[in-house]
Length: 215
Image 1 (cartoon, rainbow, N blue to C red):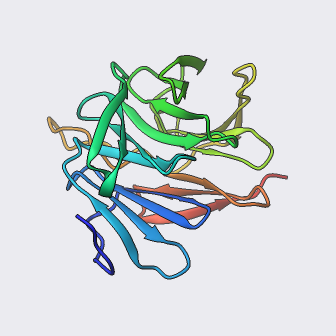
Image 2 (image 1 turned 45 degrees about the vertical axis):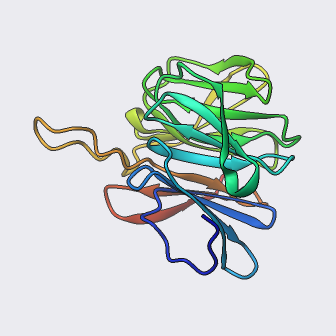
Image 3 (image 1 turned 90 degrees about the horizontal axis):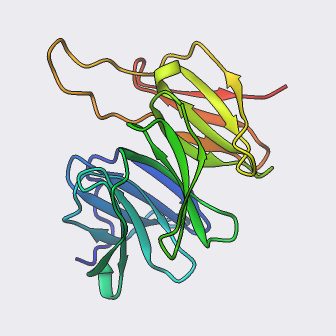
């Protein structure tokens, strides 16, 4: 469906790059593209299986991580109707960030506790492992990955070249626990990095946005 000026559909994650803001909602199975300058909706793509994040690739296609199918799905063609699975068998894909060159993406596999790099050809390389529920991820201007390690209640920096993990901020108000006997909240902790390197993250415990400035 092609839409213009359509209201938001319970967005759970947001990715801003270039002239685009891309919203994803596992709640409604929707990916929404918004013009960053005008605020108007360019596209509204439905029928994804629990999408937790999405990025726009250099060729104009949209790469969506579907938690429901444990896959990265590439949507292209008119209004994103042509869809192919780039890679499957991912263990809890939640956050995603494109590389500076746009030829690959970094994905957090929350259930496996790792960050993986996946090329547009589907080739996968594990960047870091043994993390505790990594969710939101962003690429900083210095080339470092910034990840919300929700199980450890901290924000970490990861060197994509060697996988070195460094704590940036700890003891954070993130990681909403499920109700007794209930399912996980499925509210991912988002991370963003500004051009100056300032880090922003969402707090599901306090319904707030925090800013972290590295000294």
